[in-house]
Image 1 (cartoon, rainbow, N blue to C red):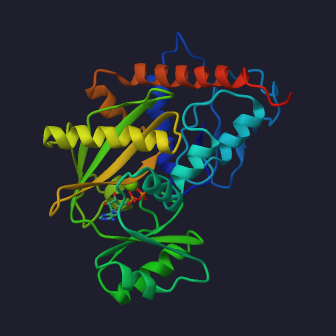
Image 2 (cartoon, rainbow, N blue to C red; image 1 turned 90 degrees about the vertical axis):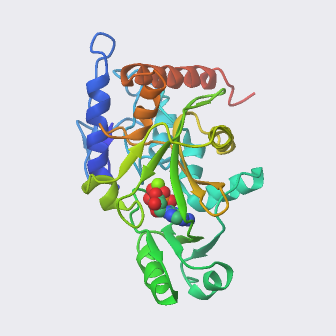
Amino acid sequence: MYGGRSGEHEISLRSAKSVIAALDPERYEVIHYEINKEGKWRPGPIVPEPDGNPGIDVVFPVLHGTFGEDGTIQGLFELAGLPYVGAGVFASAAAMDKDVMKRLCRERGIPVVESVTLTAGNMDAAEACAQLGFPMFVKPANLGSSVGISKAKNCEELKIALSVAAQFDRKVIVERGIVGRELECAVLGNDDPQASYPCEIIPSKEFYDYEDKYLLDKAQTILPADLAADTTAELRRIAVDAYKTVQCEGMARVDFLLESATNKLYLNEINTIPGFTSISMYPKMWEHAGIPMARLIDRLIELAMERHAVRRALRYSI
Ligand SMILES: Nc1ncnc2c1ncn2[C@@H]1O[C@H](COP(=O)(O)OP(=O)(O)O)[C@@H](O)[C@H]1O
Ligand SMILES: [Mg+2]
């Protein structure tokens, strides 16, 4: 299933193309579901009733962002009683919401960057100015691909950044800007998730914005990241801890910032449906670990079936 109503529609098409190309035609018969930008389904929608979709054994949602990665469509699969790849309803929604994700991680003792959360009607820059130093990063709480994100270097820029972010979400987070390195780690599994070796992203712009991610093709990636052994170990440990804290299943790409001045690692975000394009790091990190894309997809489908079997055995009433 691909496309979708989010700003990452095109990325989803690219991700889906890579996933489909990697599926073994001997093992899988692929049924394409494309959701267009208006939310219309082709060839038609999934029926939200158990046994309502007899032709489908498992769904692989290759949808990024709003209505794809945020628990909404996962809820439909639950109603339909269909096994599906990746995080469930709760983890999808919790990981999507950067404010909730950070609160869960803070409670668990996982280091996240200091931030202030502002909500519609109270987008006053003063609170953030008083608590955090410049530069600051301003983000809509529930979006991806750097859409609506700005770096603000002074109060004037902060006000503009807030009004930009507020166009995308009723909730906006303002974070202290970290000067340092960006790292990503792939996590795979249900009850016993495993972390890959991390990679480093070197943006070609001031930060890794939408243009840098998908249009410029100038950002560099280093796999495995050149880190001290103890930093790598710590990063992988935190990646798995954060994954479990948010109750992820199947897969997630867990992203970090490593502050140069302090050598401190911060968890930045958790992506429950990471990119699967030909240049995406989630499959690349597993490939580097000896799991090529075709096997990775087999494993994700197995994990989806395993979770479904466990859930189906649960009782909903006495
Ligand atoms: N606190 C921060 N300090 C420094 N850079 C940041 C910070 N937050 C975000 N960035 C930059 O902005 C990019 C996008 O932010 P991110 O939180 O990953 O949102 P998205 O979900 O849109 O990818 C990051 O990849 C990084 O380059
Ligand atoms: Mg990101």
